[in-house]
Structure formats: C-alpha cells, structure tokens
Image (cartoon, rainbow, N blue to C red; front, side):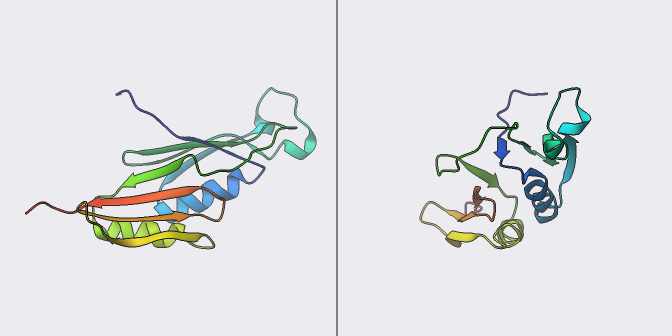
Length: 137
C-alpha cells in the first residue's frame, strides 16, 4: 500500500443513490454499510442511511456517507473529483455517464496544454474533472 489521498463525500440522505449511480457510471465495485448495521443508536428514519461506503475501480477510490442525524451538508465549488483517464474513449464514457441529469461545465475537448479535458457537475452536486493526456509526438 502506498500513501494516498482518498476523497470522502458526504450527502444529505441520498448517499446510496449517488454511490449506486457512480458505481453504474464508472462500472466500479461498491460496498455499503448502513447506519442501522452499526452499534450506534440512530433514529428509525436514519437506519437505512449510509454510515460508510467505498467505491473502487483500478486506482480510483471514493468513500462516502450520509450526514449523521441532525447534521446537514452545504455543497459548494471548492472541491472537484479529477479522474485521469487511460484513453479518450474512457474519458468520453465516464463524462457521458456521469453528466446524466447534471450540467456540463466544460465539454470534453482538446486543450492548449495537450490534454483531452472536460468538467461536469453531476445530479448530486459533485463536480468532476476528466483528463486524458494526449500522447507526446
């Protein structure tokens, strides 16, 4: 294992929907633990909320949970998830799958810095960057 930074997303009760969507969009693996499966006392209305989830695909790891009862999340634009893709086709696939019901911030395109790059905000308010470094001639 090597030292790494793993993004941990928090949601207001829709973590399962978001992580399931990401699982399908990225063809990834997903593990979910519900709050009701923990030894903590939680209100009945929160027992099916996500205590912890982990999505994995190759070198991609994203963790997430719902907020604890009584807490809320405020989404902003200070953090984006950036995926360095292995091909233009993979960038296209991830971009097109994750943009469903979201908004395109920058279409995928060849850039002046030599990458195929685009940005979206998904239907859950999470910002994504997709990058494929074009082969150098």
